[in-house]
Amino acid sequence: MTAQLPIATEVTPIVLKFHPVITMTDEQLFDFCQLNKDFRIERKANGEIVIMSPTGSETEERNFDLIGQLWFWTKQDGTGVGFGSSGGFTLPNGAVRSPDAAWIKKTAWEAIPAELRKKFAPICPEFVVELRSESDSLQDLQDKMLEYINNGVLLGWLIDRKERKIYIYRPNTEVEELDNPSTLTGEDILSGFVLDLSSIW
Image 1: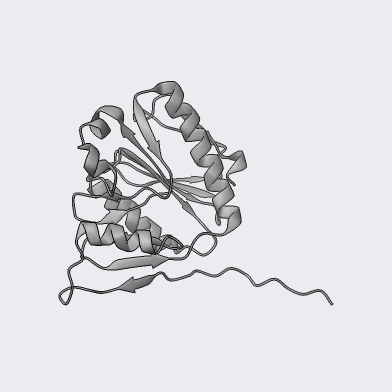
Image 2: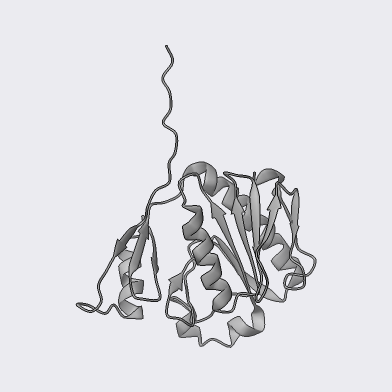
């Protein structure tokens, strides 16, 4: 009789409530994240701290491929800078989020004082990607994508490997849903960028 491996189920992140007892400043949040590097930590707009376990090896391998494709295009294009999942951004609503991949115009990035760029830069990327792992809640990721759009993201991709679906987010537009596409294009935001999904699925 062969052993059955456990099936991954959705994992609910730990949410810590501090307000009104404690108000964690941006500096304190950054230091808190540095002390707990084994976790992915974000802050909601209401001040709640969200602590997520690291993703599984397979999801991280797919994310590495995604970032590699974005990196290659970014270097060739030269108009912007790219980020991986460890980079955090302070959005206009006060939330601190770390998308799996992001891109910002170079002019907008360089306009931020150098000291602020070293921590959770106060900027919303033009482009973000979230890659759903086996244990991620789809609803939580969809809520996060809407938050990105409401704070200034111009193009967002939610890649649901579990169901082989893509959700495309744009301002003032209904979410577009694609079933098992082979590629995605960066449209006018990342002109010329084409993501090959064959190694992501």
